[in-house]
Amino acid sequence: GMGGAGFPTHVKLSPKEPEKIDYVIANCAECEPYLTSDYRRMIEEPEKVIGGLKCVLELFDNAKGILAVEDNKPDCIKILKDLTRDEPRISVAALKTKYPQGAERALIYATTGREINSDMLPADAGCVVDNVDTLVAINAAVRYNIPLMERIVTVTGDAIKDPCNFRVMIGTNYKELIDEAGGFVSEPEKVINGGPMMGFALFDLDVPTTKTASALLCLTKDQVSSSKEGPCINCSRCVEVCPGRVIPARLADFAAHGDKENFRKWNGMECCECGCCSFVCPAKRQLTQQIKSMRKMILADRKKK
Ligand code: SF4
Ligand code: SF4
Image 1: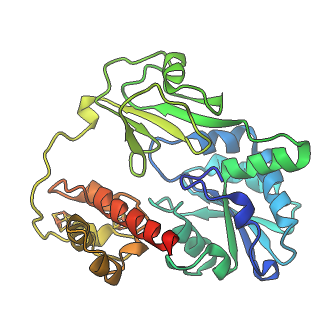
Image 2: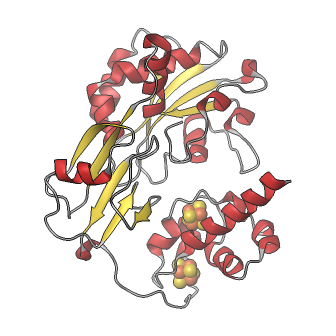
């Protein structure tokens, strides 16, 4: 899989009860700011996305295909609708533009009204979700016998001279991508592998791209908050924005104290690591980072058992 988690596609496409899959959802939401690689793919090579979706539908006789696109991409919606007009099993869903609409659980709910939690797989709700690049890779592999060798990477941010999308061989060095984009206009304060909400900071550019590398975001000093982390002021903003319906401030405290038991009890595993809580926190608390680390530890514990 070419989504952030890199979940293996062959596992996703081999549910225990394939006859119970009702929907194959193409995740065309691309909801994170700055990212445009899926957008370009849908504009320039929509037939490959649809071709991949049709390959997946071949595996699930009872399923319908949904191309789920946020409504801030009306040109993509039109192209996909035009190309699927004569496809009775495929429809295009125009979703409200709202971060994190592309998170798996949010997408399933928005397209089917079905809900899953962290203990469930999409297949438990009769759904299979694949992102745009994964569908393109499936199309290439199944129809043309071409293995996964390339992907589209967005190189962007105010520190980049000519922000653009590149089709790159997996393994291409990030330094080369920056040179191709005209280099830096000013020294970046922060370089992020991925989007601003879910990506992670890079401390060295001598790093190869991987199959899940959707973007390289180079931010200037003006774009990066320099405020230091302060104490929680109990404003509850993090709770209001949380799509996982948890209490980020409380979970971050449990994480800081290594309290796995309470972290689990307060539904910490329902966090989808969207980054909204950190984004809105006026105290600049590193909520997502702390919650994410704790989730990783708990998932590692589960694997050991
Ligand atoms: S990152 Fe924060 S806002 Fe997003 S789901 Fe997790 S706790 Fe909630
Ligand atoms: S948003 Fe920040 S300051 Fe406000 S309650 Fe949450 S952690 Fe505390």
